Image 1: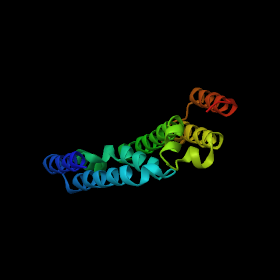
Image 2 (image 1 turned 180 degrees about the vertical axis):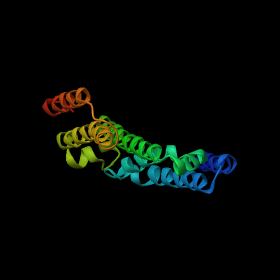
Image 3 (image 1 turned 90 degrees about the vertical axis):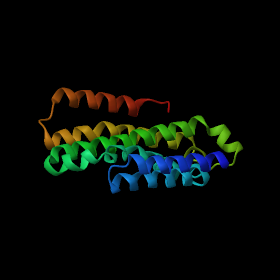
Image 4 (image 1 turned 30 degrees about the horizontal axis):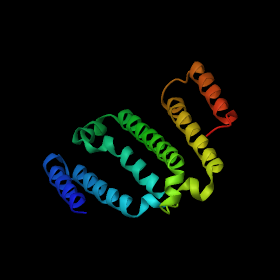
Length: 170
Protein backbone atom coordinates (compact mmCIF):
# COMPACT_ATOMS: atom_id res chain seq x y z
CA UNK A 1 0.00 0.00 0.00
CA UNK A 2 2.92 2.35 0.62
CA UNK A 3 3.91 2.53 -3.04
CA UNK A 4 0.27 2.91 -4.08
CA UNK A 5 -0.28 5.84 -1.69
CA UNK A 6 3.00 7.47 -2.76
CA UNK A 7 2.07 7.19 -6.45
CA UNK A 8 -1.34 8.73 -5.79
CA UNK A 9 0.24 11.62 -3.87
CA UNK A 10 2.59 12.20 -6.81
CA UNK A 11 -0.43 12.12 -9.16
CA UNK A 12 -2.23 14.70 -7.01
CA UNK A 13 0.83 16.99 -6.98
CA UNK A 14 1.24 16.67 -10.75
CA UNK A 15 -2.47 17.40 -11.20
CA UNK A 16 -2.08 20.61 -9.25
CA UNK A 17 0.91 21.60 -11.40
CA UNK A 18 -0.54 20.81 -14.83
CA UNK A 19 -4.21 21.65 -14.38
CA UNK A 20 -4.98 24.75 -16.42
CA UNK A 21 -8.51 25.14 -15.12
CA UNK A 22 -10.69 24.10 -12.21
CA UNK A 23 -12.63 21.69 -14.42
CA UNK A 24 -9.39 20.00 -15.53
CA UNK A 25 -8.26 19.67 -11.93
CA UNK A 26 -11.62 18.17 -10.90
CA UNK A 27 -11.51 15.63 -13.73
CA UNK A 28 -8.00 14.61 -12.69
CA UNK A 29 -8.98 14.30 -9.02
CA UNK A 30 -12.09 12.29 -9.87
CA UNK A 31 -9.93 10.03 -12.03
CA UNK A 32 -7.64 9.29 -9.08
CA UNK A 33 -10.61 8.58 -6.81
CA UNK A 34 -12.37 6.36 -9.35
CA UNK A 35 -9.17 4.41 -10.11
CA UNK A 36 -8.71 3.77 -6.39
CA UNK A 37 -12.32 2.56 -6.06
CA UNK A 38 -11.85 0.48 -9.20
CA UNK A 39 -8.78 -1.32 -7.87
CA UNK A 40 -10.21 -1.92 -4.40
CA UNK A 41 -13.91 -2.62 -5.06
CA UNK A 42 -15.30 -2.34 -8.58
CA UNK A 43 -12.81 -4.48 -10.52
CA UNK A 44 -14.39 -7.54 -8.91
CA UNK A 45 -17.97 -6.65 -9.84
CA UNK A 46 -19.77 -7.22 -13.13
CA UNK A 47 -19.77 -4.25 -15.50
CA UNK A 48 -19.27 -1.47 -12.91
CA UNK A 49 -15.46 -1.54 -13.12
CA UNK A 50 -15.64 -1.72 -16.90
CA UNK A 51 -17.92 1.35 -16.97
CA UNK A 52 -15.52 3.30 -14.73
CA UNK A 53 -12.53 2.61 -16.98
CA UNK A 54 -14.58 3.45 -20.10
CA UNK A 55 -15.85 6.65 -18.48
CA UNK A 56 -12.32 7.77 -17.70
CA UNK A 57 -11.26 7.09 -21.29
CA UNK A 58 -14.05 9.24 -22.70
CA UNK A 59 -13.19 12.17 -20.37
CA UNK A 60 -9.78 12.74 -21.97
CA UNK A 61 -10.85 15.38 -24.56
CA UNK A 62 -12.33 17.50 -21.79
CA UNK A 63 -9.02 17.86 -19.94
CA UNK A 64 -7.73 20.74 -22.04
CA UNK A 65 -8.63 24.32 -21.25
CA UNK A 66 -8.39 25.17 -24.95
CA UNK A 67 -11.35 22.85 -25.42
CA UNK A 68 -13.52 25.20 -23.34
CA UNK A 69 -12.60 28.15 -25.56
CA UNK A 70 -13.16 26.30 -28.84
CA UNK A 71 -16.61 24.94 -27.95
CA UNK A 72 -17.90 28.45 -27.20
CA UNK A 73 -17.45 29.38 -30.84
CA UNK A 74 -17.71 26.09 -32.71
CA UNK A 75 -20.73 23.94 -31.94
CA UNK A 76 -19.91 21.39 -34.65
CA UNK A 77 -16.56 20.82 -32.93
CA UNK A 78 -18.43 20.20 -29.68
CA UNK A 79 -20.71 17.65 -31.34
CA UNK A 80 -17.79 15.85 -32.96
CA UNK A 81 -15.96 15.81 -29.61
CA UNK A 82 -18.97 14.26 -27.92
CA UNK A 83 -19.19 11.69 -30.72
CA UNK A 84 -15.54 10.71 -30.31
CA UNK A 85 -15.94 10.57 -26.54
CA UNK A 86 -18.91 8.24 -26.87
CA UNK A 87 -17.01 6.06 -29.34
CA UNK A 88 -14.01 6.00 -26.96
CA UNK A 89 -16.38 4.98 -24.16
CA UNK A 90 -17.93 2.11 -26.11
CA UNK A 91 -14.59 0.87 -27.53
CA UNK A 92 -12.98 0.91 -24.09
CA UNK A 93 -16.00 -0.88 -22.65
CA UNK A 94 -15.64 -3.51 -25.40
CA UNK A 95 -11.95 -3.91 -24.60
CA UNK A 96 -12.63 -4.29 -20.88
CA UNK A 97 -15.29 -6.94 -21.43
CA UNK A 98 -13.02 -8.86 -23.83
CA UNK A 99 -10.29 -8.74 -21.16
CA UNK A 100 -12.78 -10.13 -18.65
CA UNK A 101 -13.49 -13.04 -21.00
CA UNK A 102 -9.74 -13.66 -21.41
CA UNK A 103 -9.24 -13.56 -17.62
CA UNK A 104 -12.24 -15.79 -16.89
CA UNK A 105 -10.31 -18.66 -15.26
CA UNK A 106 -8.16 -16.41 -13.10
CA UNK A 107 -11.14 -14.28 -12.06
CA UNK A 108 -12.97 -17.43 -10.93
CA UNK A 109 -9.94 -18.49 -8.87
CA UNK A 110 -9.77 -15.10 -7.13
CA UNK A 111 -13.52 -14.93 -6.56
CA UNK A 112 -14.27 -12.03 -8.90
CA UNK A 113 -17.82 -11.71 -10.16
CA UNK A 114 -17.24 -10.27 -13.62
CA UNK A 115 -19.78 -10.10 -16.43
CA UNK A 116 -18.60 -13.32 -18.18
CA UNK A 117 -18.74 -15.19 -14.86
CA UNK A 118 -22.21 -13.88 -14.05
CA UNK A 119 -23.78 -14.22 -17.53
CA UNK A 120 -21.56 -16.79 -19.22
CA UNK A 121 -19.39 -16.43 -22.31
CA UNK A 122 -22.22 -16.74 -24.85
CA UNK A 123 -24.43 -14.01 -23.38
CA UNK A 124 -21.38 -11.80 -22.89
CA UNK A 125 -20.56 -12.40 -26.56
CA UNK A 126 -24.02 -11.14 -27.51
CA UNK A 127 -23.41 -7.98 -25.47
CA UNK A 128 -20.08 -7.53 -27.27
CA UNK A 129 -21.78 -7.80 -30.67
CA UNK A 130 -24.39 -5.20 -29.69
CA UNK A 131 -21.63 -2.84 -28.54
CA UNK A 132 -19.68 -3.42 -31.77
CA UNK A 133 -22.73 -2.62 -33.85
CA UNK A 134 -23.41 0.51 -31.80
CA UNK A 135 -19.85 1.72 -32.43
CA UNK A 136 -20.46 1.30 -36.14
CA UNK A 137 -23.84 3.01 -36.04
CA UNK A 138 -22.81 6.05 -33.98
CA UNK A 139 -20.77 7.77 -36.72
CA UNK A 140 -23.44 6.89 -39.30
CA UNK A 141 -26.13 8.48 -37.19
CA UNK A 142 -23.96 11.55 -36.59
CA UNK A 143 -23.09 12.00 -40.26
CA UNK A 144 -26.72 11.46 -41.20
CA UNK A 145 -27.72 14.30 -38.88
CA UNK A 146 -24.91 16.73 -39.65
CA UNK A 147 -23.28 15.88 -42.98
CA UNK A 148 -24.42 14.40 -46.29
CA UNK A 149 -24.85 10.65 -45.91
CA UNK A 150 -22.73 8.37 -48.07
CA UNK A 151 -24.30 5.29 -49.68
CA UNK A 152 -20.85 3.67 -49.95
CA UNK A 153 -20.35 4.02 -46.20
CA UNK A 154 -23.86 2.66 -45.59
CA UNK A 155 -23.26 -0.47 -47.67
CA UNK A 156 -19.92 -1.07 -45.94
CA UNK A 157 -21.57 -0.58 -42.56
CA UNK A 158 -24.34 -3.11 -43.19
CA UNK A 159 -21.91 -5.72 -44.55
CA UNK A 160 -19.83 -5.42 -41.35
CA UNK A 161 -22.94 -5.59 -39.14
CA UNK A 162 -24.24 -8.71 -40.88
CA UNK A 163 -20.79 -10.25 -40.60
CA UNK A 164 -20.78 -9.62 -36.86
CA UNK A 165 -24.28 -10.99 -36.42
CA UNK A 166 -23.58 -14.13 -38.39
CA UNK A 167 -20.24 -14.90 -36.72
CA UNK A 168 -20.37 -17.72 -34.21
CA UNK A 169 -17.31 -16.88 -32.12
CA UNK A 170 -16.97 -14.20 -29.44
